[in-house]
Image 1: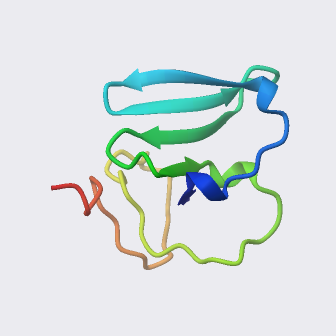
Image 2 (image 1 turned 180 degrees about the vertical axis):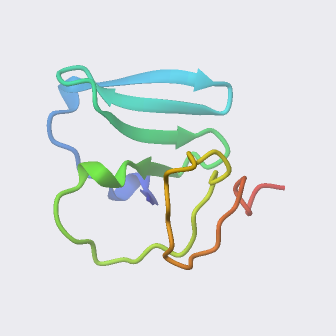
Length: 92
């Protein structure tokens, strides 16, 4: 899920490390436990993508699409009816 970077509040920042996984993105992970936490796309510097599995409880927003959804394993059966895109539909 993506949020404006300015809206993100983070405790334990001392455990956050960034890795340039490609020219177009960085990934943030916890140096304490190794969990993948964030994805920062170079083409959208004002937003940060948060790994949903790391947020406890419900959110006050609902998903509206799946992006980069072209490599799911055969056993993964997602049937929520949301649109699926192999790439970001907002990228030119």
